[in-house]
Length: 472
Ligand SMILES: [Zn+2]
Image (tube, rainbow, N blue to C red; front, side):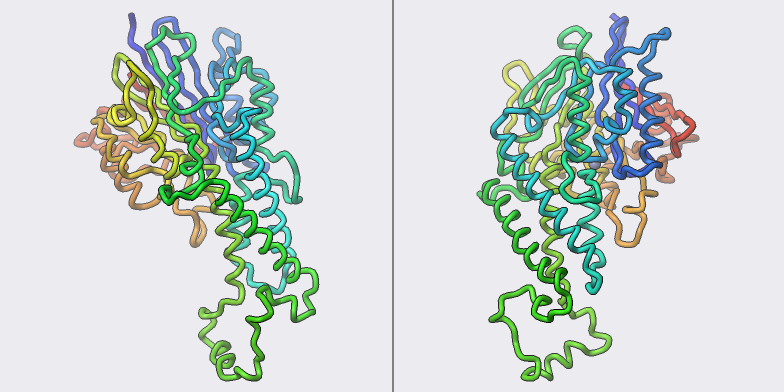
């Protein structure tokens, strides 16, 4: 029997986003796995790039003039930057076809637990949309970063500018996947699958997340004993109070009373406190002012929503059994998801999560290498000498490049990944560090040996090359 090999292609979506095509082969057996396809914005330029990518996937699925359906399409979580292409290139994906679609248990219709969570989440998204619409109407307010950040977080949900537009793009994407797929599976942690079209036990696929435990799913810092229901309820109540304050603020701007989002008893007569008010309004002391700080409440709620959706990521580990090598794809999983892996049991005859981490030779870095989407205690277990990290990050994305932009990649995490991977980092934006160049690599680093595994492919319509890494 010939050697099993897999080619992992990272598509350069040109902004925040994930699109990975895995091509497994051994003798006559072939299997293609597409993990996510999307980018953050739904601009004309983004859509054009995504369509080029879909056409390239179609070409890579074509053998002797025949287009072969993708064997497995994985949708990790309901964020625009992971699923939008299944909307923008639906026609192309329909031509290609999909034999299997794998989604998380949270996407399963009729799953009561999942339905309740989805309902609560939807409500929160709608409230935030309302808040967003109201904030954008207020002209006499320093909206600044708060409004911008809420807008950005809502952007992950692919929301239209008009509030209450249902369903949003990631939901359309799921509908399209369900429509195109010949078969759908909703996966729960602990499940072990084998790779379609391959002998059983050639490649085992382990499901690590998303957790079914609400505490893990809904908390960035689990272990405080707070349940999901309480948390989401508090969040929604928070948006209600916030909305009523905003309604006062924006609907009658000439009435001084309405500028006051607090209870009447906290109000003081300015003439009695002229001294305090004088120093409050001192020139050069504007940074002390708190007039608009209440708006930050909305930002916190938006961040909460964002964390939850990232934690809902489907996490898969592909084990090449004979080679004893593992490919780890975590979507955008945040702390709660990673922590929950400790409790996952794959049953008799299967390995443990620690063992999978120790044998990981390819880590698809979570959430575009942001600081809270790779749990240190798990990363430290990735000690395989061949470890390579693939990072879907593009620092030309204006959300990252602007002043006070998103910290992606986060400096300390990036540094540690680089140390563990011996500098072998493959980035979507082609910005390799000077000490780990992709071409003419330093002979004294592991890059030299790695270069024969890397293929860079430039195609028209994409700013960067498609990076393919071969493992066998
Ligand atoms: Zn993402």
